[in-house]
Image (cartoon, rainbow, N blue to C red; front, side):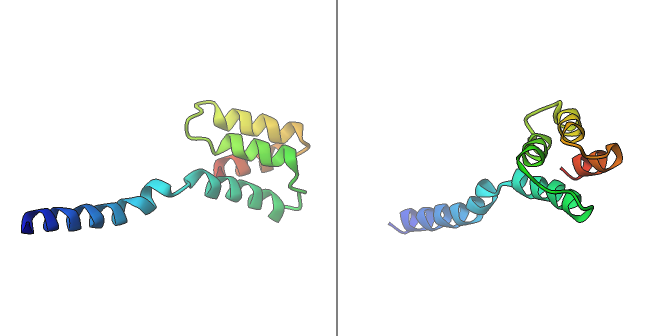
Length: 89
């Protein structure tokens, strides 16, 4: 009985430790950094910028930087600012 109780306590402790790591969303922080970078440089952050920053922060997309860059420049962001924002993402 003591072994079951100890195993249960260990399982609860592991779940409590692992849950915040599993539930964390790193992409949203990167997307926000991209948008903040542009906002701080005077750009209006609208749907096109949000979409490009979201694409740039997707770790499952190997072409994310280029897609972010081209999406931002197509939305009227200067090349240097687009590169900095995509680096933030």
